Image 1 (spheres, rainbow over the protein chains, first blue to last red):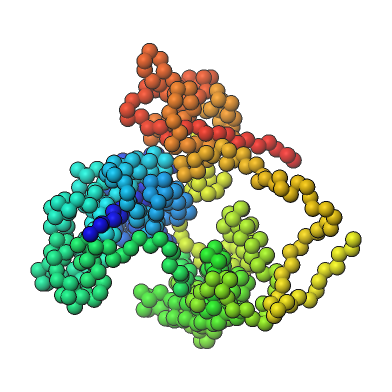
Image 2: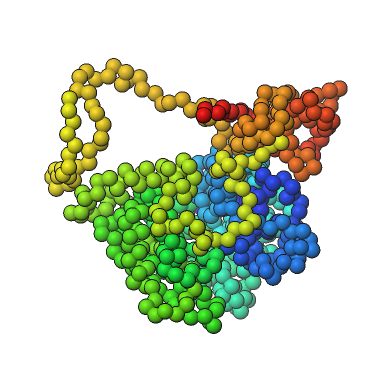
Amino acid sequence: MSRRPIAISDSKNFYVSAERVFDTSLKNVPVIVLSNNDGCAVARSDEAKALGIKMGDPLHLIRDKVEAHGIRVFSSNYTLYADLSRRVVDTYADFTPSVDIYSIDESFLDFHGFKNREAHARAMRAAVLRRVGIPVRVGIASSKTLAKCANEIAKKNPIFDGVLDMMDEELARWLLPKVPVGDIWGIGRQTERKLRAIGIGTAAELRDMPLRQARKLGTVVLERTVLELQGEPCLSLEEVEPQRKGMAVTRSASAPMMDFDTLFQAITAHATRAAEKLRQHSLVAGTLTVIFHTNKHRPDRPQWSSARSTKLTPMSSDTFDLVEAARRCARAGWPKDEKPYGFSKAGVLLDDLLPLEDRPRTLFDAMRPKSAELMCALDMVNDRFGKKTMVLASEGMERSWALRADHRSPRYTTRISELPVIR
Amino acid sequence: MPLHPIDQPVIAEGQPMRFVRMTVSAGFPSPAADDLEDEIDPIAWVVRRPASTFWWRVEGDCLWDVGIRDGDLIAVDRDGKRRLGRAVLAVIDGEVTAKILRRRNDRYYLAPANSAEDFPDVELTPDSEIWGVLAGVVRRYELE
């Protein structure tokens, strides 16, 4: 059986590493990055982990530790992270013919055909660190699940110095009995419990599980994981981007939205973003849904939850069409009684997506020949002068619903007004 | 020749036709059409490695000796070769500072990039961190 090597490269504490590229005073000090709306810790430096900060710890519960140890706290700066992520991926592209981006900080890479894979991975790792300033770790194996395993082992054992090539079956035989079954990609807490109940506690034991039993215990997904652990790739390197079927833009509000205008400002912003995303991918949507609801964790307050859909005819990616459709949905879903509802979340969902060129033509297409030009101009303005330079007036100017991001670092790489300064 | 705008959509074979709005001269084809080239892009000329090049804003006279002035934007390539005489950004005591790479008596130093300032040279050690190498500078002047 010819086994094709797949590598996974992931960035260590990516958001923290990204903050450290420009703010050099963050080296060797505890740093955490907060989730959207400054809720909980979603990235921690090694120093912060050593202080006992856990993934998902809410900021208000760790304030004492933050103050006592001088932990540096940041809001997420996705603009910066996305730009650095793109640069990391650009660097990968110099080391492999095929990059499959799995998330903002993880990519699968085709490592087929390189003689000394470990040296190649080390050269790539050094290049990413030198060029972008982001430390990455690389796991190599003949399936994605095994590569993830190798990556996990490299992460936990400093002796591997960030690179582990597990194509060597001898090495895999020695290492897999040491990997807890819960650490394997795709094994959730429930499956882990079921597996442990029948005496399967390590990656090696799962690898040796009979396929039929695996399928019975955890459906075809678990069977596939077992095959992957045996080194047989079932999740191929996706070289073609799968076609999107739906798209969603939803956000929590910083403060409860009490009146229709405030809610509709948020919904306008979400519909505008959704339309931009459609146009980026040259798609049109046929159905639009607006959702909004109150805070479910406050049962003492009046509760309301609404989801309303409408057809987009003709199918469209025009901001005006989407905002108008969203307005109809929001109106339809707005409570008819006068209770003081405070809406904590709103979103716009798009379905029935089609490539622009495949959309069905309707009689009314010709009515607005300028729509495409207008949208093109809108995108160009916002591209050149920064996001939200030109918006629909119904989005409002105050953005009182917008997320809290009190500790966000500058958008160093995408705004001329926020460039890092050398004195 | 007068041009008349078209008010009604034009339908051909059941499909609405889009018109590109531009004036066309109906004489000979332009003899220059074969020689069209892209507009020059000096920024791309400065930024030779987009993945590793980052822009910084200069405040004050920290890079005076290499002709860089207050308010200039500089492109810094993290992957640029560290060569003698080159201007670099170095991390010293957790802070990024502009320096020039120098050599004296077989030892390497980070010297100030502004000789008017009275900063001592810092010896370059294996632990010294160089953030990047100066790749270029962009300056603009008031127009109003």
